[in-house]
Length: 197
Image (cartoon, rainbow, N blue to C red; front, side, top):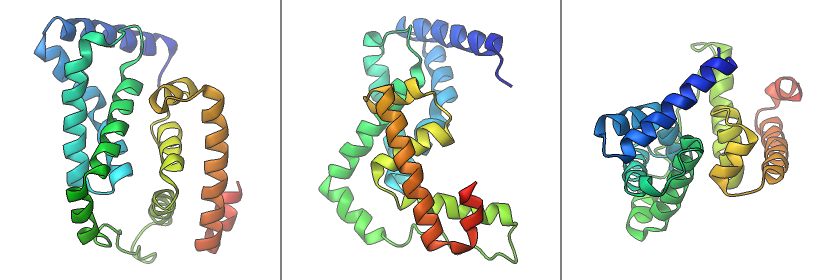
């Protein structure tokens, strides 16, 4: 559970680690990477849809962050900054014609296998449906849902990561969740009652 004290200790610890990393302490940088690598990878995977590409982008995002660390304001939380770099790297990755053509060759192979309701728990099936529905939304909708709902970033942290105003995050999230609800109701009518809540 995150109490104000544990959050403060974690923030102070991260601030100290950033300062140490800025002074060239590789161990401090490795600790920061470990703290944030899952979130960075997940965002890259959400935006790219391929685990190998997401790993490459995540690695490149950390390299770029390391190179720019001396310009980072250590009074800010690190995660939104890293996610902003990751997001930009994903867009750069997509622009690459070579990788785009390779992705077209893999298209369809990334679709998860249909869930067998008899073999899976209902909760696991619903989670799979939710993930599929989110993946079918526009990229901007995926980003705001992922950052706010999956990573549970604050509105301010999400705004920083997306380079928009906090009010924009709130309105985008509201519209994105409405589109998600409509998609689920349309494609999976048996879940209509679940999404209405």
